[in-house]
Image 1 (cartoon, rainbow, N blue to C red):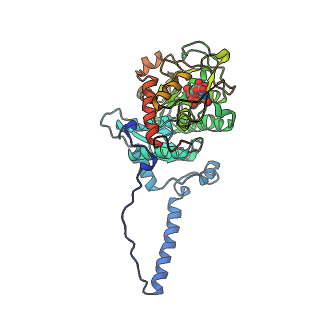
Image 2: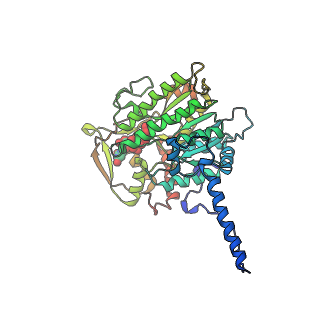
Image 3: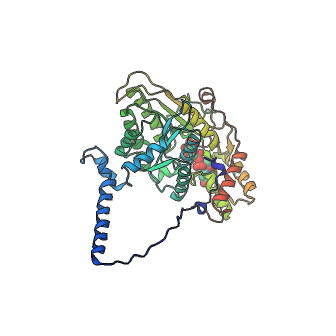
Length: 438
Ligand SMILES: O=C(O)[C@H]1O[C@H](OP(=O)(O)OP(=O)(O)OC[C@H]2O[C@@H](n3ccc(=O)[nH]c3=O)[C@H](O)[C@@H]2O)[C@H](O)[C@@H](O)[C@@H]1O
């Protein structure tokens, strides 16, 4: 699989296979032939309906409510589907270290990059994504198309769908789960709080329930967030610092995830590693993030709001480039110890870890805008406004010594270099900025 930076990425460039075929005109010789034809079509429909119906491929009783919700979700199941699942999750590397990973949120920004990196090195990867419309789903579909060309099948489904998750574990004994599916975004939590509870808490618990019962249990690496440091003022943020003052509901759900991870590790022996990502950016990124929509608005000539802190204080972020984050994720998977339970029973103490994955050099948001202006060759229309009370924190700064020591994590991309790669991708994907991101 090619590296994601090098991939031609304009949505219009994805070619739909158009196999040449010919329509043969058939002259019906008799009405008996017509009758036979339509009877066959009818029988074909009946066969497809029963064969592909999930209810025919699951052993759960019909009264199970999770199965009812399944009826409204996209269809899954059946031998052809299982074959695709198995083939995508098949380990191709000759090394005995090859892993078979279920990546949730695979059509998301980090999920696409991690899935692609795992596949490139020969690991088995199966993606799962619900393709929700928090941001433009066509970007997620483009990422999916990219992954599928590289041999990664992305199953369309939700982490709250227990029957689907169980089925996936029945088909593939995943050694690892890379759990990246989440409701992201700090500010949106004020608009749609329940979506955070649904994905980041209920969905996570549902996934852990299935993992704890799986035999063998997988090791789980999952995305926490730098936002758990909340109102902490001690810098740089270390994993030992307090995280009991979240400033947003988003942060609170990620913090809750860390506590939930502790519980499942303690009771069931699940091996769990949480990664606190620090403002990840790069090609194929998230349109809800500032660097992304600043780029869109600068190119459109639209004014952008640049936040400042109290008393004209600087607002800064420890922006971290996606390739560095991917290396951290792979380091976490490679050093994850096996879970110790089986079939829901703990047999010994299991690994429980949390790491900062940041860049260790915070950059003011005003500097981010200046770099974008230089790269896009367009002057931004800046409105400097007081940071609204919407869950944002004034600055982040990671201490990464723990990840360095345990995962071999060493970020190497500064903001200037990373944004250059992002801008190149953005201009290619959105046709020189003429086709604006939504
Ligand atoms: O590191 C993290 O844990 C989090 O990083 C980002 O959250 P954030 O750092 O707030 O990233 P952006 O929303 O892209 O904001 C970046 C900076 O731009 C500022 N900003 C944002 C929006 C705006 O209109 N103007 C503006 O100046 C923000 O205050 C912030 O300092 C992600 O959106 C979260 O999902 C993630 O968990």
